[in-house]
Length: 191
Image (tube, rainbow, N blue to C red; front, side, top):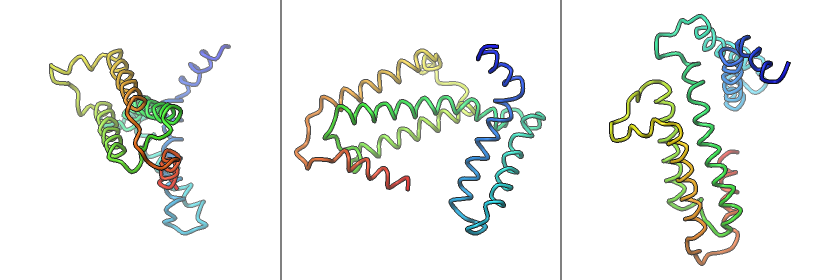
């Protein structure tokens, strides 16, 4: 048995239909409950039970086909998460390249960081909306964006365009170490 056959066997057991969505929902809900501490500091057992119940409440209707057409949460997640992962990987690669090639680029603290966050929010919202079927049809003048190869080409061109702009723009006369201060500020957000 090779790895491909193993993956098909796992898929036959419901890996992407039941197990992975359940684990994802369980992990997110459990982490939120642990952080918020709604039931108190040492109530890990209650948080586990609540996260398991919420995970099962999402996955069981999917397995039994109880969701209304177009409202299946697991299908929406399975359609949207790969696209969101592509955007996240693109942003991380852009940040790595900026960190390698642009030592004096100030991202945090400028209006550029706000625009990047706003555009990312719009893209992720659009991806989830398309996966949910809210934006089924693009206008005729944007129908060329439905092609996956065109989508990949547009993302690649945007990433390289931003990279070229970061590399070729004139550096400001500021204090040294601004990029490391920017990463420290980003770290403070996630604490």
